[in-house]
Amino acid sequence: MSEEALLSAYTTMRKKLLHIASRFLTDDDEADDALQEAFCRLWPHRNKIKTIEEATAITTTTLRNISIDKHRRQKIQTQPINEEHDQTEENNTIEHEELFKEVEEIIEQELTPLQQHILKRKEYQGETLEQIAKELGMQPTAVRMQLSRARKKIKECYQKRNPQ
Image 1 (cartoon, helix red, strand yellow):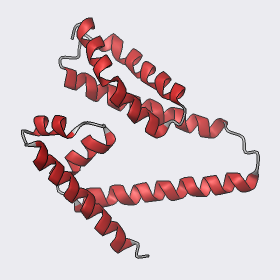
Image 2 (cartoon, one colour):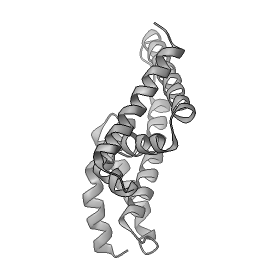
Image 3 (cartoon, one colour):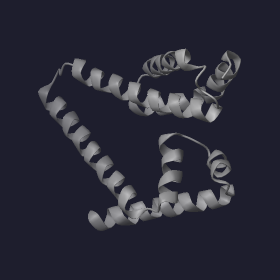
Image 4 (cartoon, one colour):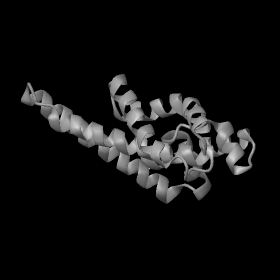
């Protein structure tokens, strides 16, 4: 891929990629840094990348991993001021991670492969319904319906596992 094409793709993807980084990092500057680092890692391999979709996939994965690493480092470097507050925050983090694992388990066990694919592209990679529909050769309304059914199934399964 030419330098100009890669820079154009980066400019087009920037907002979506910042959204992905901000899911892991609370500071906008940290998200910007993570995005820049991901692009810098991609740049030496620009001649091996053939399509914008490939560049998007590689950058998204790299950015996600960098953001997770930065988030982990932030947690390690933070010194608790108040042990009571720290324990509450730690408990919330553990609960959040357990909830996330449970929802991922439901996704893997209960959804069809198509629903899993659409959900992951929409929620994890931040793609639009139109982009997903184009990739799958479907109508955007059909993608929206599959996404709606997937979310409904996740909600139902979660409520069955965790009655209030």
